Image 1 (tube, one colour):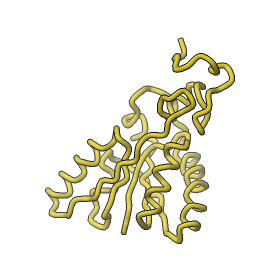
Image 2 (image 1 turned 90 degrees about the vertical axis):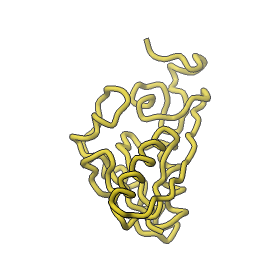
Image 3 (image 1 turned 30 degrees about the horizontal axis):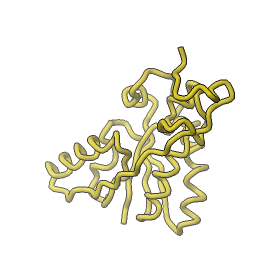
Image 4 (image 1 turned 120 degrees about the horizontal axis):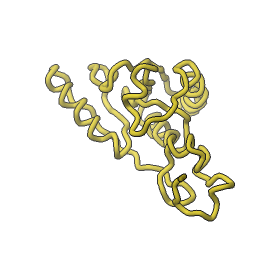
Length: 164
């Protein structure tokens, strides 16, 4: 099975790792990594995103051992549009998180318009941080949690309080 997933992955965290694990369980994986020009358009909040080359290097470090462990192939491709690579006919499944499910459904609409079979949408639930809220790159960049969802030292004992 040829599996696609995509994102900005800045920084990579345990929620992303759960997506990668599921993708490699299913088959060979192609990860669409958002181009620098596209990355700001795909964020739900305005924040700094590291350059593509840095994000690609970190993504490579995450994917290589998982691919080897699962006996799978993988590829990283640059995404220059929101619907990305998944509209291409060679893919069978798309791994998404709950908030990107709608994007997956839109991709299937585009595939139908092009005469391609729909992708199997594989929804992977979020990973909760220590405070019960989901792990996200935005929370990590804001200094609330680390990549594993642990509260940062200045956040411990403050629950889900957001920075002022």
